[in-house]
Length: 321
Picture 1 (cartoon, rainbow, N blue to C red):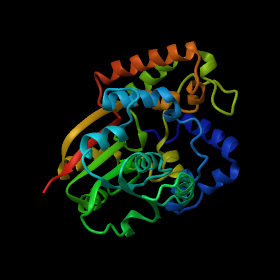
Picture 2: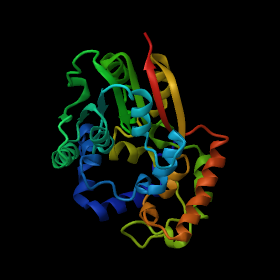
Picture 3: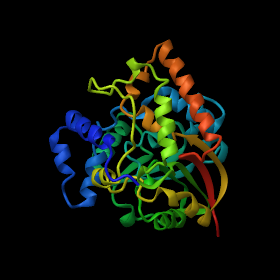
Picture 4: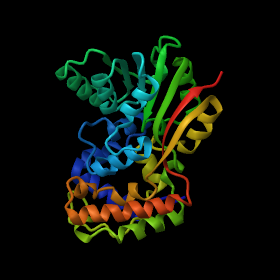
């Protein structure tokens, strides 16, 4: 476990530059919920995170569905709900991009629940613009949400379950909300708590960075070169967002206690997440050199995954009785 790292200093200075010192000051409050909200209750916070890269999403699509251009939303809707309309409850839905897609393309009743009001307002605006009447947005804590009994065909956690400390309790709520043959769907980080990655993983990430051309390693909003990472320190993780990966190691064990696996696909991310953080913008519309770099680092991560469990998982599960 690392208390403070060099990455913490770089990350803090970067946040001050891109989001202002008021944002940094917001982290000094003793109220953990307020620190959590300041981390992601902002429609402009996405910055240069690795998932903005189109080829990352194509890679995930292929890992889940076998086709780079087939989204998991389409895959799930066609495979599990092809013959009937269905209801979907999304817990911790954030900007609701996946939920809006489902509401737009399928005969589904969708409800999004999150404590991040700004993100839900943005999503609600998009729904109104597109004339989507089958999706609603609830700015509530899931512990206070009225689930309406065992009536949901599916409960979705898309990169939200790892923000809960009481994984067992949250999964219990999801289980109780599901209909008799309802499905739990996750697209989740399930790696080490607080992203306290082992030394061999940090070394592998630094090795991978050397295969990215220098022009693609300039950090967003700075002139600083990304040559090496040390991983996040535990202190910054707690201060920046007390909910981030607080009990991520418990996710799969708790799911297996309460649900039966129908399918589970590893999505990697062990090396790519930290390697591409703050430099992902270079790869949104890459040239041939950028594409070649992505090919190389994808291959390096695939080789790493042959020996280590994936930090990100897509899964579909049916509840046990």
